[in-house]
Image (cartoon, rainbow, N blue to C red; front, top):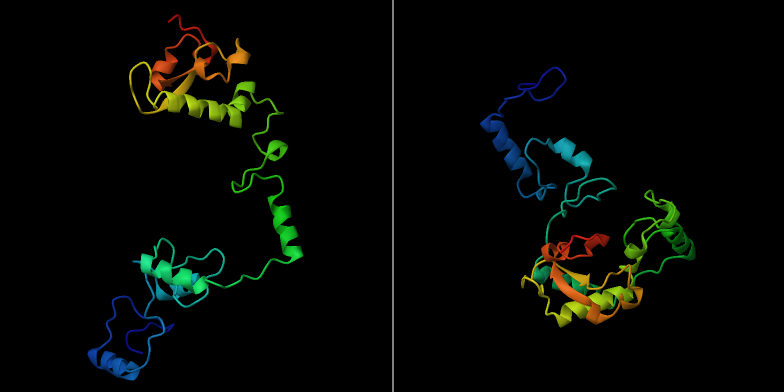
Length: 206
């Protein structure tokens, strides 16, 4: 056949004659094009794209690219989707499915995917510093928030309102009873905080 090699594949650079193109056009006239909505990327062959499952209207399997990837719905479309789901009840998970989900997430922080405690690859035998554990407590976070609010989120040395920290006026290590006293905290920027006498447990001589 003209324009094809011995295996029946089109020869690169071959151009279909106008008469043939006209016949093909007439043959398809009035028929819906099955892949009319397909998006092809430059350099990709239709057969390859089909194998990847990126034709619209075909189910996309695990590991394949979806045409909806990166596409944002308009507000009108979002509203239509929302209304379409009103009153619909989703089928609840079976007890077996619930058990499988539970087993899969066992030992992980909810929503993060990170393993907790000894199951974590960074586990070093439970040697987290007392100060690190202290700063993760709700009591510390509330104390810090109150100091920020009192100082109007402003460095009390230079007046900066950028990246701020709360400094313990009297050493965190030497005065444990004053750790959560608001009067023992002051808002400082990172630069001013590093210049304090007891920053990081060191004496800068200032």
